[in-house]
Length: 179
Length: 106
Image (cartoon, rainbow over all chains, first blue to last red; front, side, top):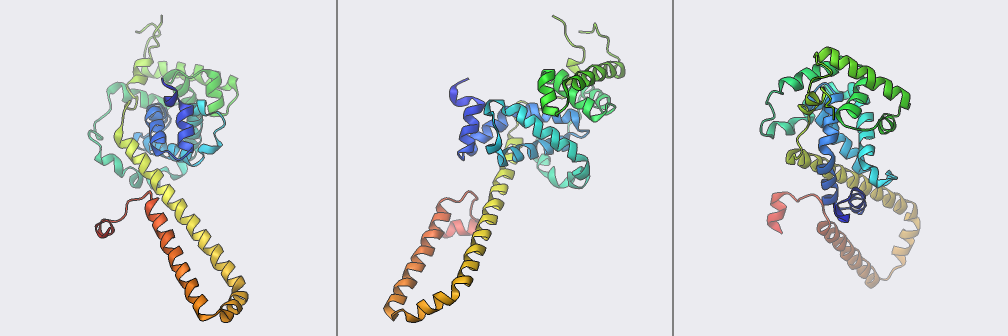
C-alpha cells in the first residue's frame, strides 16, 4: 500500500476537505462495517442504513479522531453505539431510508441458506454477545480490540465470545471437527 | 491448521467487497449534511449581522444623514459590488449542483 493510500493519509486528506479521500475510506471499510452490522442487526436493510449513518457521523466528527491509523476500530465503535440506539428509531425510518436500495441490482435476492441459518442463530443471542461474536469470530478482531470497540471489560468479551460460540455451534448443529 | 466450522456460515453473510450504490448513497448523504450545515452557518451569520445593524442603527442613521450625496452613491456602488462578489464566490465554490434551469441561464 502506498503512503497516499494509508488510512492515516486518507483521513488527513478528508480532514482537509477531500470528498474523494473520504469516499475511498468508505470503499475500504464498508464491507467490514456492514458485515458487522448485518450480524448485529436483524434486518440487512437496517444494517446498511446504520452503516451509512456510521460513515456520516464519522465524516462529521473526523477531527476528533486521535489515531487516524486506527480509523477502522473507530468506525466500528461508532457503528456499535449507533446499533445500540437503533431499536428506538429503526421501525419508523426503515422505509424512508432504504429507498436507495430499490435501485440496486439484485437487492431482493434471497440470502443463502447458510446466511439465513446464521442470522436466525445470531438472533437468539443477547445483543452484547452477538456483537462480541461478530467481531471476534466473524471479523477476526482480537479480544482486546473488541473490548475497546464495545467498551466492555476484556473478561466480559472473552466470556461473550466463548458462550456465543458454544450456543451457535449448538443451534446450527455443526460439529467442531467439521471443515 | 484448524478451520472454524462457523466460518463458512459467517462468510455467507459478508457484504460485497465493492458496492458503488452504497458509496454513492453515503456520499449523497454527506453532501446533504454539508448543505444543511452551510445553510445553518449562513443563517446564523445573517442573524448576527442583522442584530449588529439593529444595535448600530442610531449611529448609522446619524452617519447617513450627514453624508454628502456623492458619498452616498459611492457607498451604494461599493455595497452592490460587494454583494455581487459574494454571490460570485458562493457560485464558484458551491458543492451542490444548481437547478437545471439556472445552469441553462449560465
